[in-house]
Image 1: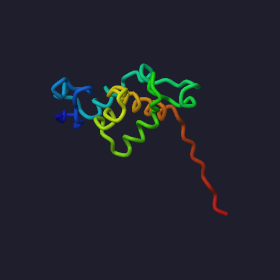
Image 2: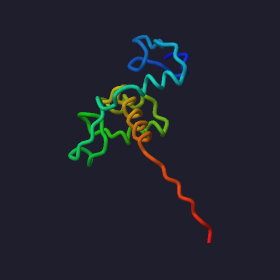
Image 3: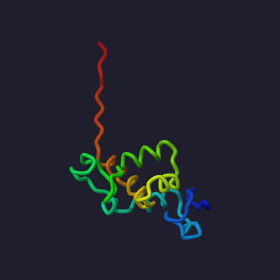
Image 4: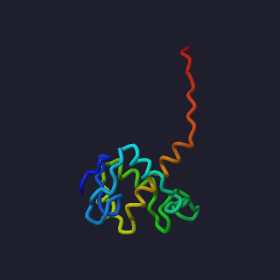
Amino acid sequence: MRIGKCGLGIGRGTLGNARGVCLHSLSWVDCMKEVFAMDWREYIEERPDVMLGKPVIKGTRLTVELILEELSEGASEADMLEAHPGLRAEHIRAALAFAAASLSSERTVFAELQAK
């Protein structure tokens, strides 16, 4: 795997070609815009009869929550693809894009607590 100008390791199945060479010379910010511009709806669904309605990778029982937890625990893309044979690199990016979209549509309300 080689590191692109964006600073990310770009390998096969991500934004690189079969030799793992970065196909772009984008900045990190522009690279992230490209990654998150994907339509996560192509890969993620929420159905009441699958995993109690949690968002999952279409056609699987792999939840977005599981993917995010594994990433937060330090799992690499290669680790995850090996551990979950039906998972593809674009599924991982879709889970990240879903999380970003979910957070961007939330509204945080701060309440001031008064001391007694």
